[in-house]
Length: 292
Image 1 (cartoon, rainbow, N blue to C red):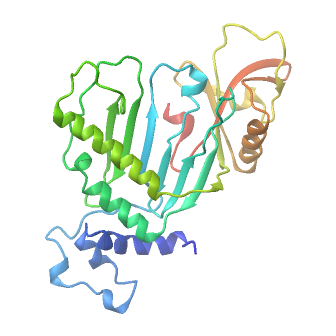
Image 2 (image 1 turned 180 degrees about the vertical axis):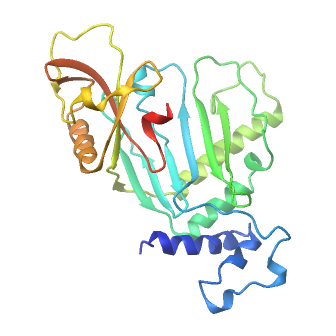
Image 3 (image 1 turned 135 degrees about the vertical axis):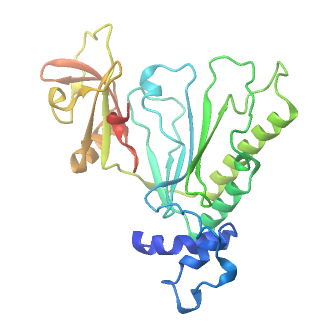
């Protein structure tokens, strides 16, 4: 059974208690049942730490950077996002041959309360988040990607971030210390563990889609397909970067995402002009172009 947002919000303190991380969270569950009244033994002098909101990111894994064409780097998505209410969004398995211009497909699911508590406990007690600013080192590797983990620590309410360059690549030059390698192995283990925990099988159809126009240095002699979205001259605005950008919302966004996924491409024709465009789903909490 899928819980409503309100019900999930009231259960989150219980999950923190189950995880054994936030004893003070037990003092905030008086609405759940008559036996949940707090006692002096399960409160803190500070009144209890902040808790993750159900509409905020609780756990996210993303890999970006490296030497990639802009149409791929701009279209990238976090491989896994878990929200405070247990909603899960992950990237779908990609075909063996990537199709240029096809937005990354996403799957969604719901993490059960017990598994959500397991995820919170595993991340909060791992060496990766045991201290601020851990040193992961940097192997002597060029043009590799950077793996970033975001975790909202229930003890503070803050979204903690850890970034590791060239994760999983061999340290052929031997520049990493044993402690740095241990931390990298722990990041790898934590990501693999969370992927095994999280299950998602339903297609995710976004309610907001970002459209980015790439600068073109050469024009295709063949016009692209007819653009299935709103008029580009009305949609796209300067974004403070080297490209223009716009966000399509609601049912129009869902139709656009479906159309571009079914008939992918970078070159599209709008009002007689060929435009080179990247489209991507915006996840809950992502602002889109205004964050650029």
